Length: 280
Image: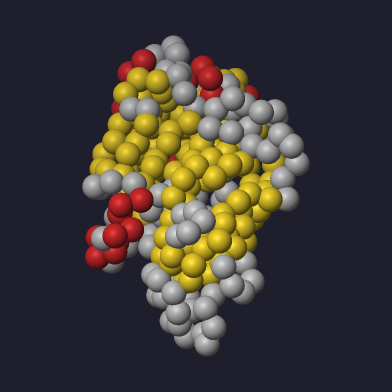
């Protein structure tokens, strides 16, 4: 004979079922929007955000909030719920939980933007001791609103760490210019807008190097990349030190673009770094 559950026992059982559903949901990368009294919930949204978790001085990281790829099997309770687009979770609320010196987060507060930018001032490169703990950077909370029950929004926290690029320690016999640049390039930029990056140019050689010119090449017209300042003709890079040059990416049409930044010393071979960006 099966014992009948009391009202209290049924409530506890329902609560346990809801906790299990939320656990599966979190593992799937989906954010809960609303639940009904008994599971499963009637609707939900799923978001995905992909961004570099580390950034060098002079760089900018863009956290993009977009629809994710949550998939549920047909027999899963969430498969019967209605999925909402991420735009229905707007406006977002961006809160800076922590931002160390020289680290800036924009925008903050209530925003309609899907992109949160974390930028690091190039001056941080002159204070390598700040980065020794490996925890220097920013923690940013993004809260998505619930269009049907404002008090039930969902939030997540993004952490971006700042690192210092290291120079090779092995000496070379001849003067040499070596470029370092972030692997992620300039990312996606809206047509008509611009993003600038500071690229460090290191002299790993044993003698000072005189620079004859800095230019952008291998770029079809109209070229969206241009040198914005810093190192130029007549500059000198002392042995074992670095200089910086600013490069601007300003796309005039949608689609991927690439180019090469060339630094030519007065004597010896030049050095180059690949530039890439995408217009949107």
